[in-house]
Length: 159
Image 1 (cartoon, one colour):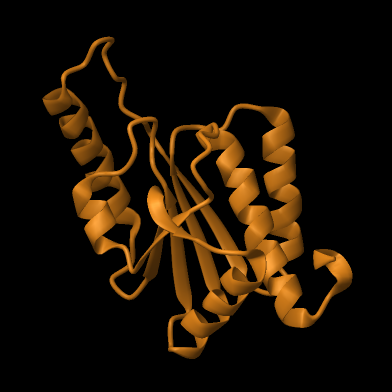
Image 2: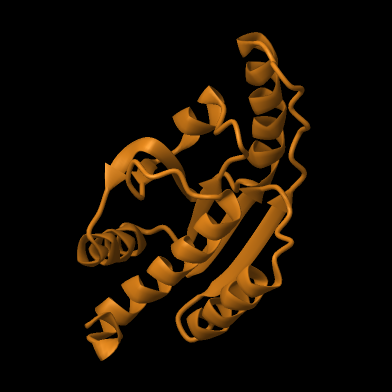
């Protein structure tokens, strides 16, 4: 299985980079992980809704260019479905059983994701109503992917 994490914006904090590297290493037993960082658009102060939509559209085009035609796409969106860890693990397993070998997770920029990217998604997923920094969300997501594989293995990691 191949897991791709497409994110908008660069990760600068060393502690987050180290955490993501650790979970990527742990995941290498189960899958290949690729992290794709895309440039985020600069948003002017007091940007209009139209300007925000244009920015999201440009970011969306860059995201779309990195999605494979046969990828199962999961976008992180506040309006998405929330999963307990066990159910998320079952969902990843079901995706693989249904013939998908490439799963792409997408974390948008500070404005969110364009309509086109949300429409391309096979699944919209949410980690709740909390607002988290996008950089921190990367670490949380990759840890949950690792946890999902450990649950599938019956590992005590999840306890």
